[in-house]
Length: 406
Image (cartoon, rainbow, N blue to C red; front, top):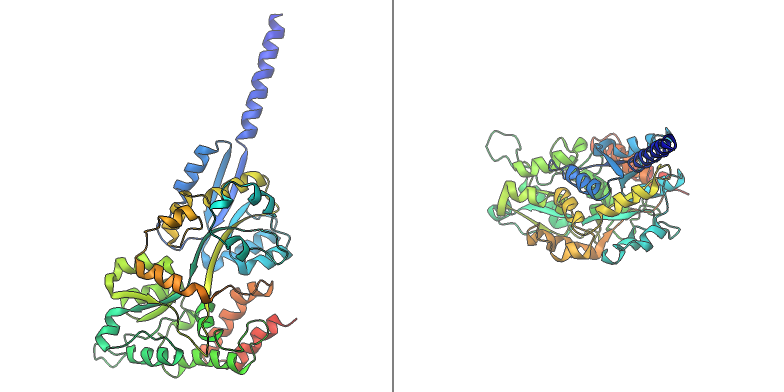
């Protein structure tokens, strides 16, 4: 009887250990990209794991310049993360690869759904109407300008492309008298991610359309306008064909450039460096219209995730009030929850105003598989070649048109 009791006790202990091991055996591999040095991910992971003791989060910060190349390669190689930060331009490609787990039912049953800002789920839905993404932050791009330099030269903030060109030329100066330009009118992002700069000066034009109108007179004029700003007017720094995020922001803070285009994610760093010398306004109207990028950022669960429920718990945690504030305090973007938005005070009012004033003409890139290649390879390569004079504006637009041709 005693042996039986001992055996039963041992069996119970083994079962308990097995159950414990199983409950602690869910690991969610999560990829994200943060440019800013302040990174709250460790604190968010710790808070989540404390609330969900059966789940371990392995969060990896993957550099932005190689983020999607690394992600696509991992999927093809059968080593994709369980969940990751994702943008809309990548959604069609990821769907074609069969990489995304549908989230519609989970979002519908999620108590946090009602607290999401209106229309975000509609904006980030796929062409088939399903939600594969859960929004985690958003922005709209606008024009940063050095208010001190504008005041010094008696310049007004440009509201049209013609005004933009004249102001940029006036701001491009040799300020120390050594015969070399040391301040440039605009910090253009010619490297990966700079398509938003080009788009604001090109896609606003009537008849310019990324999918069906890139060889139109208006679209070619837009690209030529950008190229001429560099090659004819000299208002971009010489490094512009290769400049990325760090370069354009660093040059603006250092006073090497007087204007650039980015979003509210850079506002606090700008103010820390420049105080009231920096301000913001919507991008200029070009060719009869406005165009600026709606900066989406979401999270997704991948179809190969070993524990999809655990991965969903993690990404929904990041989009829940309080946690979403912590996430966006580091990224510098805006929260997706009504609760966090109502109490948002982490950016000076002028940058929030510039964001809100830009929303009426903010756009997403086409929800097509070709958009991923446009962002990652076709645009940056063609733009660099156009800026360096290797190809003409017409050639650049023709390459984009060929990419999107059905």
